[in-house]
Length: 202
Image 1 (cartoon, helix red, strand yellow):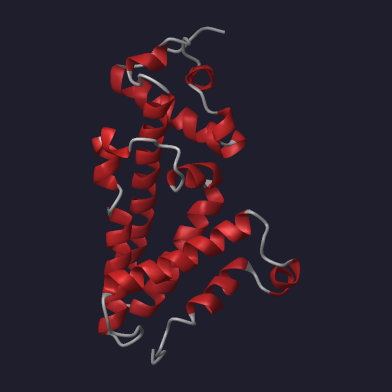
Image 2 (cartoon, rainbow, N blue to C red; image 1 turned 90 degrees about the vertical axis):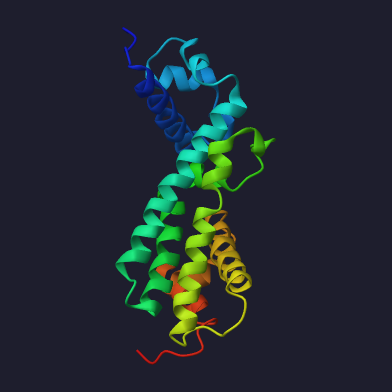
């Protein structure tokens, strides 16, 4: 098969997209520079023009994954800016939906696969944005009386931990089947989030 020709920037993006596809289909064990090159239909040496090793590839994929996640979450946050309680539930659901749609990518983003994060400035720059977005949602709900007052950063960690743990339990099939037969996943997420809400005077 004839190898594809890419412009300089296009090749890097094509390799990242190929890596994301491999992660979602095969997981981290299937990810390598050689496999990414094959998936992108370029020569085995082509990835080295952009990534010195597998770690650099993982960092680039994780950076793009975090950027995709931020685009989704910030978009939902903006959409429900004037409806704080809906904003809380819908942002949480968007996070869960992202994990369901991009499971392999999601797991790598929130793993220890990158050994030296500070070697990759783009990753370091994008990393806090999703947490900052969560804090914005928390503040909006605190101001509207739906969440208890206090340090919004700590409350954001609590709610994020719950949502993150919930989806990982689901992905690893650790939630009892009798619960999943009784509730759809979004309904179950809503019930769990209800534990944080102190008022529902919509």
